[in-house]
Image (cartoon, rainbow, N blue to C red; front, top):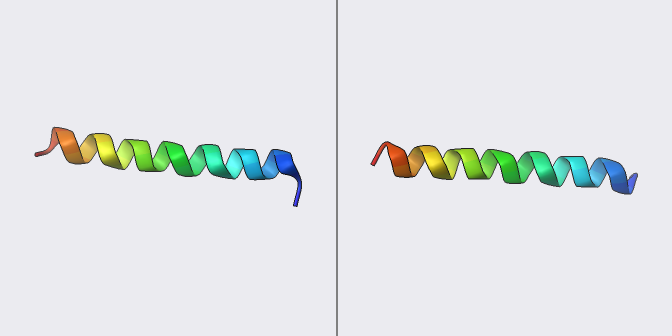
Length: 28
């Protein structure tokens, strides 16, 4: 596994979690 790929994967995961978290707060 290339460390660059891991960084992209983590960035995508964090981005998804952040979006879901934000939407959850806004729709409350």
